[in-house]
Image (cartoon, rainbow, N blue to C red):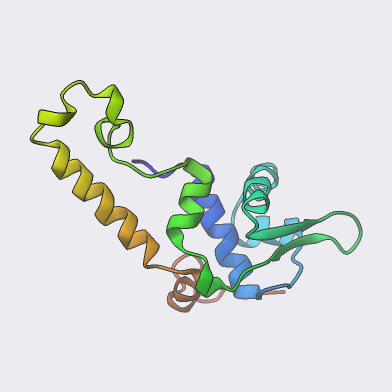
Length: 144
């Protein structure tokens, strides 16, 4: 599994919105500049995050993006899987019917356990924790 650029940018976007607070409208340009996400890419990412009901998109004057859930309720796993789909390390685990050796493969259990551990680790990290640890932004980051 390799985290895509869209996945990384989605994490940055939700982290930024989490720092601003639930229900606070934030302009696209502000997020783009402060979270270092190209504006065009941000516009695509927020569509997926909106469909998953993590954020709301408001158009027009006074519009922007608003976080809909408490950061404690949003896990890193949720955001990653919204952007890239279910996490698995190889096709043997993610798509077992494609693996002709699956029932007798000695390595299958290793891949399956590793995938499960990764998913569990990401599920145990929420955005309230991330903003406390300040993983994505520099210490001197200021919010408008």
